[in-house]
Image (cartoon, rainbow, N blue to C red; front, side):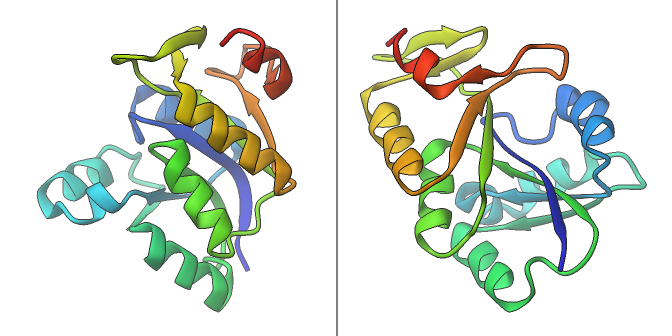
Length: 161
């Protein structure tokens, strides 16, 4: 059974901040990227897998495949940093049996109808519904872009919407 050392939502998935800060801070030796879009695009999937340091094993799953692997053997062995690109994907994984106690929101980009709530993190009305649903399912959600930032509680973030 793998140890989930960090479950992070970041629309950029594997990027400099994750590689230089979160992998080391969490002591992860594996990254599990959970994205239906990336899993369906072999070219981009290969690029993201090469973005990780050479000593870090990277697995890429669609949400259904990730949940199946979770049910079968809790992702195998190692210290795993799990990355989701958006709130909807992590919510679906939780509904499908991914048993996670805490989720960090680290980066959700901008767009029409989205409001900045903390640094580079934006939310819209659908995100608020999803976040409240995760909370009702017993998941502790907090916001933190880099390890040096003080984690922000969901209740405080929702007041900014």
